[in-house]
Image (cartoon, rainbow, N blue to C red; front, side, top):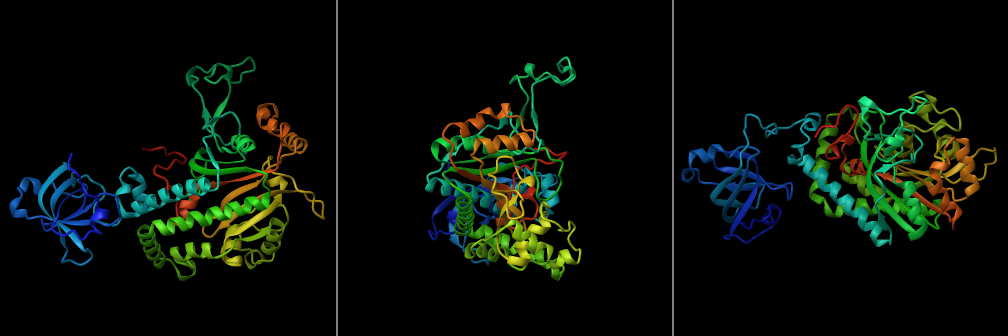
Length: 482
């Protein structure tokens, strides 16, 4: 096979006069002479110059936008603006034709909505080249961060019989015949005849299984797909998404907050260091989008400034109770500008409240702790009641500008009596989670962990505004295309 050179390497080369072979997809073809070629190795194209007098007309007609070609020729110094090198081609071969009448990605600006409809082709645009290179870098950085700290990477089940969040919004997994579903005597579906002989679902979290491993390895993390059958069409929700979930033993809430802050700063810095070209492109793209908005809706920071700002500042830490005081006396609350007004302790904070704290009040990432027990999950460690007798749990949420909640976690309830009492109060069947309770029976220890919605991280770092644009093939209500 012909050895080809990657465009990203050739653009840095000064080996003028050497013969090279490049392969890629045609972005544009001008004047029957200048081909802008991209092979996905970088966002920039290389210019391939051909002599149309020496190529048959039939071949020239096939050099169209989207076509895959191979070009061999000499690497020369470019005289044109915007590039330092180009390839003066002696031979061109069509590897794959692209009908210009049907190829939907023509050399013009396309809306993100349109590109979602052709998600199988949108990778070929500069925007999505940049987004998915950044996504790759962030995923790699997460693995590197935990590996450097001695965490063991665990693969937890995608198919599960438990509901970690207790929300009940889960996709069922079954092989039963829908047209002839077996029923029990009382008319319910007889799952004993199903593949697993019990009701099973796609997982919403690897946390519970992760806790089991943390009680043996000390420090573990999971990074895998999770699923939520929530009928939500917001720009922040997906039915299939990826979660990063560390769990570590002999740790409390303070340790948990520090690990989460360290991780966020590490992966953001990694992206800044390794995705300069992509982030500069996305920075410019976001700035151009901002110009179209009214002055009062424009971002205070550019994308790059926002990322640098997160690295330069310690995250603000405060309790839920302190946050409620701030929100109750805030101008948007006093003037009834919040959609959900804050009038009493115990209210579940909405995105508008979280973003006010981050973007207006503290103007930096915020870690909220010690939430009311009634609005948090059963597995969170119960604090001693406060001075007013209110029950809180050792929970934490990390809030980021433009996103709201980025991370949710807690110190876990390691005391068997407290945990089983909480499960009784919430009608969570203990017999179904006997294996989880065993970790509290045999060598229980303080431990903590959190979950990071990976797409929300990518959303923040890339400056994209819709979560459907940071995952390759988004799954959401009434859409499972590709």
